[in-house]
Image (cartoon, rainbow, N blue to C red; front, side, top):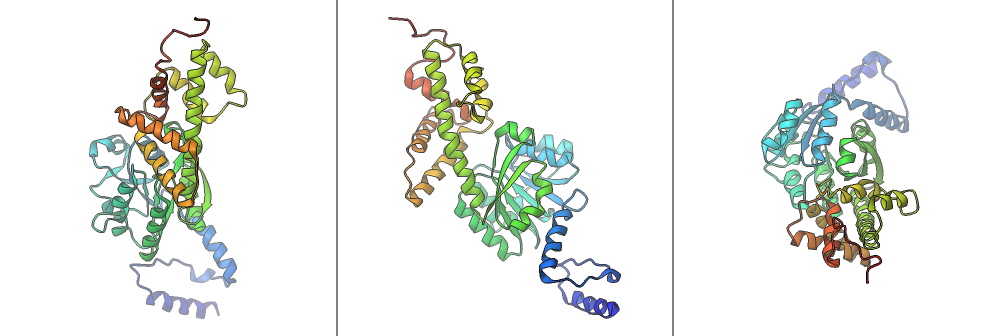
Length: 356
């Protein structure tokens, strides 16, 4: 009986186009199981298939966060092929063992799973969907593209559709946590797409942070945009609180320490309070990119018929930073906009308290 099944399976495998499918089995250990059990076994097997010895990785975008994220995968033993518009920006990763190539298509042709984390939706469209040089023009059937850029939910759905038609998978998986989260492998990863594919990719996501499966294609992007709505208003509150405390003549370091253990304590305060006080405005996340994110949020609000005045105000304040040429600073640079409005600086020792 086993021999007959084995012979039939041999015949079936020979009928498959071998350049599209790979089938490995041991004839002497064939099991007959129900369809439900087969699905369970397949998903469990897929989850263990991903590893340094069996999975080639590609990476597109080595900015403030991407560089650290890519380095974690290299340090875990994975083979990485990378693309950046400027090869010198990938030099640190190349010195760690990554291989640089000249197009996203070339990355995909040498990879089983490709990550992208670039700046804008237009960049995402170019590096993934371009018919001549994009990822999906070079990714083999069964390959996966994971876009970690904060982008438009509708674009994530489009990418998923095009990938599926090509026999590939697409996951939208934007991240939150900034440069520190990227360096410490402590990012929150919001994943949308096929849940079984996300489960399969857990060994990779776990090297970067914690993944949360949010639902269908585009839901990862919706989650990240909601995250940005919360951050925007939180940053306004943080900067306004510091402006108020300064004007009241309080010691700002003591003020930050005091409120951090109460109801005003927050991730934004922990990450950015001391940076603002130390005038460290280097980007963990660029103002330019945050303006882009908030613009997408506002367009989605319009589509949904939502009025979020706090979001609109925050976007206007961040736009003012961009207008002053401060778009390449970090999001904590919002303090500059609030200082200008009030004609003061936290660096000044002057205080209005007790003055006539």
